[in-house]
Image (tube, rainbow, N blue to C red; front, side, top):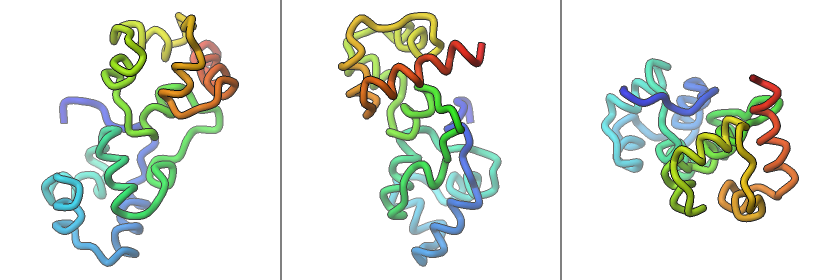
Length: 140
């Protein structure tokens, strides 16, 4: 897997939710548009789903994305983005900014001039957006 998947992904939670729903690896894989081997690697912990796959898994299994990948005690914008099923590219498109700008916002080196728009895209209220943005500064 070339790209890094969602942080804090819990393979055990995925397996438990799949079994609770009475789904085989093949059935779950079909329902999210993946192969059984990919879902097997998620469950084995050798791969993590990307944001869009996490969202599909949560929807099919009837759980919150945070059930499969809990937020840290002090979540960052990247964590909120991933749990919303968004990629850097989708945030860039939705905000009308370059990928590099989205990265700078998530890294805490740039605060956007239109925070209500950004908060909306991330699915957050502006206060939570600002707190998450500040977390990048605390973790540097």
